[in-house]
Structure formats: structure tokens, C-alpha cells
Image (tube, rainbow, N blue to C red):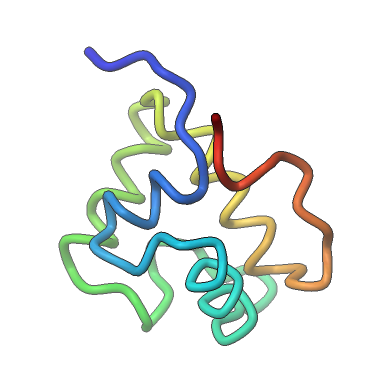
Length: 88
């Protein structure tokens, strides 16, 4: 099992999305979750992306923390990034 701390860039890469800082910010600025909407049920995910996100949280996988951060950012896109996007 991979137990590293994943970044938002890593998550976007895993989801098959553009993973540059600019691409991540553009995605977050362009996609929002409604109150009460489950992250994995959002209409902008493919089936495989939704499944990955759902399983990451349900299984409390090593991806769960960064998935939770994405959820929060999509609900409050004006919220500043609390951790660096790129981990050096």
C-alpha cells in the first residue's frame, strides 16, 4: 500500500486531469459543489473518477485527506489553499 502524503497535483494526475498548479486552480474555479452534494456524485466526474473518489473516502485510503481537501475547495473556491499544491 502506498502511504505517501499526496498533493492536490497528485490527485488531479491520478484522476487523469491536468495537474499543473494553473490547471488545478482553473478546475476549482470552474467547478463547484452545491450544499449537500456528495463530491463523487458531482456531474463533472467520469464514472471511473467518481468511483476512485468514493472509494478513497469510504476506505479511508491514503488519498482520503487530499480528497477531503478537494471537496472543501469545490464548496468554497475562494478559500485559500492551506497546503502547497506541489510538494518538493
